Amino acid sequence: MSIDWAHFTPASALAGGVLIGVAVALFVLLTGRIAGISGVLGGLLQPSRGDVGWRVAFVAGLMLSPWLYRLLAPLPPLVIEAGTGRLVLAGLLVGVGTRYAGGCTSGHGVCGVSRLSPRSLVATAAFMAAGFATVFVVRHLVAG
Amino acid sequence: MPRLLASFVAGLVFGIGLLLAGMANPAKVLGFLDLAGAWDPSLALVMAGAVAVGSVAFALAKRRRVSLLGAPMQLPTARQVDRRLVVGSLVFGIGWGLAGFCPGPALVALGEGAGQAAVFVLAMLAGMGLHAWRERMQGTALAAPVPQDA
Image 1 (tube, one colour):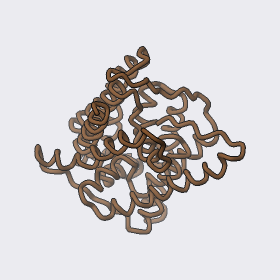
Image 2 (cartoon, one colour):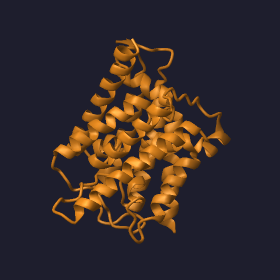
Image 3 (cartoon, each protein chain N blue to C red):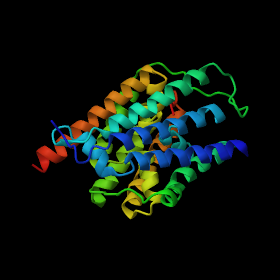
């Protein structure tokens, strides 16, 4: 392992993380809910009465965030290396996996770890390990 | 109405945090997941910052029965670590490592107008739909619904 000092951005990473924490805090303290994005989105596919508006509002906020960001600063680079086939496969796996596990990076990784939930600690360890292993295979075994 | 506005603002702040952290960019996420290459530890600091604030928020939330806007406090109660949790998380992690996208950043990148993000999000919705369909099929039989942590 060697640290990529050219791309390591500790200050903006920490500041961005704090903002994510603030968003999670606002959400739970004001609405009483967990800001887990796979759950917010997945719930829209199994809609029940009175349970749709807040989900749409949260997703709209996420999707409009680049517009607000752009008023304050230039948008950071967006580099998507995966081709269409890989994006489709990745999307399917993320969709099925997060719903099956009951959460993703936000619901388990941020909210659950903040609550020290045993389920979320296990989930986070599992998806991190699978992510590390997958990138190792793709970049160093298949591509190498 | 105040709750809808609170949800919208929370989504907005979440997205701005992702953008500022560089996490709406899959290349940067993959830089973190590539331990054997040139490793970019940034994502670990994003988690640290988010969890530091989140811990305080949830400590406060746990002591309340209703939110500040009067909604019931809905914190997850499931504690059982089961096969679905582990298998689902592993499947999610493989997808995450393939493209560098998880659900939040994909929606932000879609908001930036990236066509490839649209491909990912459509596939992700299809995957979520598949899960919803399976659950409906099983729901009439015996299976308990998947505990939702989020």
